[in-house]
Length: 152
Length: 298
Image 1 (tube, rainbow over the protein chains, first blue to last red):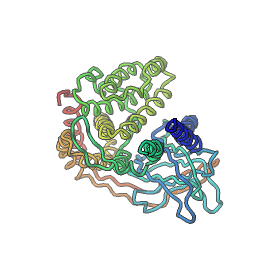
Image 2 (image 1 turned 180 degrees about the vertical axis):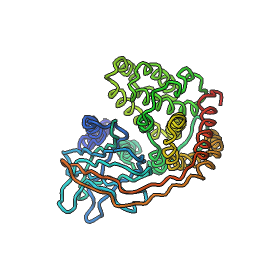
Image 3 (image 1 turned 120 degrees about the vertical axis):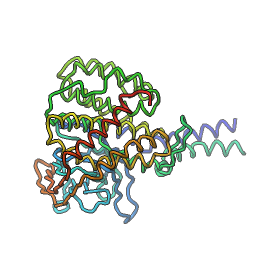
Image 4 (image 1 turned 45 degrees about the horizontal axis):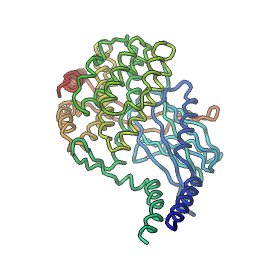
């Protein structure tokens, strides 16, 4: 009987913990479906599901990077949708290669402190670029980034 | 007492298992079916896979070359049942993916069903058919106006398969899907070159992608199939070694339009490739394609 009570308590605590935690898979899935409706005149290439916890204190803002191969003469569009129930607004940054020698573009304009919706990129080089995702001010965030190419 | 510890620890252990993203990075892939241990970090493999183009991108570049659609360029659909192991099946799966993309982008839905059937056969063999709703795809293929939906659904499915295979420590099959797609795309470039010699620059530019393909095969060469494929790609590597690519990076031109950032790449790439090099690359690609995609007993 005592064991059964302990088991019941453990399950209750565990269930509460599960319910209180942010369900990133569900959020990613919903955001992905929504993101696909925004492709318009572009074809989907890849999706990037990103979740980051709020940074601790004055820690630097966390980034996650992925290689992305682009072809010369192609027009690409990169955009992101983030979960509005969290504070983090998702930012996309593109660099010339995985060593990130220089930044090609970002959806965050430092001067105006504003966030843009998307990056449209006409590539004149075939090569492996780098796409980075972060959340403004290191806030907790959950989002889906999309890479797409222009339909003919 | 022991029971109490077990009861209290179980949920904690479960929580730890659910949230352990960083641990995943340290996972080592294991090829359980072949008994081969592939000593490659999951994250590294994932990054390398992302350097390879998707079947739909390859099909798009081919379609934009404005060559008249030709079903002769495709891997015959009836071969799909002849590939004997998961590696050749995965390679063929990627090649058929490009063929299907090429068919759909050209709105030749007459062939869609046939190639969907081939993809279905291979998907069942490599146990990823749960990601394809073939009846919906088949229904969509009956109408030419549905080409866009077919492209989007197929691409979504390919991405899910890649994610699933990597998650399940079968990332080497993802690699082969993309390598198969690349081989098929290069073969198509070769076909286009017969009537449009200007495409040689595109063939030369693919040196960058070939470098990524070769690097990933090198990483996985403890698996016999990969070691053989890499060995068979050595003549192609020698051919590509002669091609010169120079990229001069320049700050891109940027402007904001309707809340979107428009970037015009100002970098310049010069591709140094002559007709002899082009023909050699095309010939080496044909050798690889014939051995791995058209001869089904490898």
